[in-house]
Length: 77
Image (tube, rainbow, N blue to C red; front, side):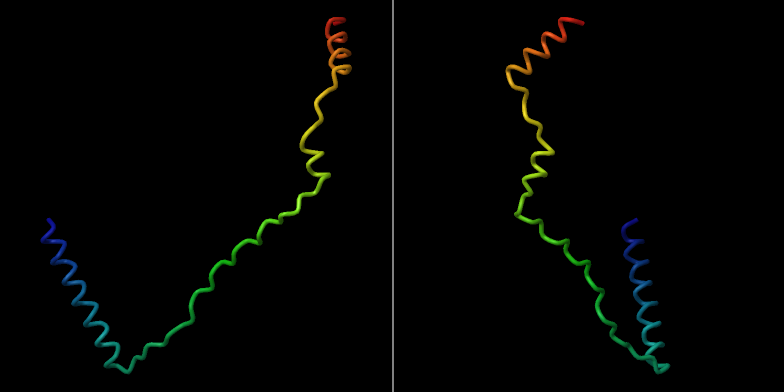
């Protein structure tokens, strides 16, 4: 099976070479196109941290007095 694949690829290569020769013999020319533009990198993350954002993300833990009040409310239920 591998020998068949090698033969098939050699035949395909010969066909491509013949097509290339026919193209150049008929007056065809190769033109070089510009490169493909790369996708730009995303902007770098800022080192600055807004204090308001941190306060919004993390809530302050309840004080002992608030915990006591919550326990009393829970017991009342």
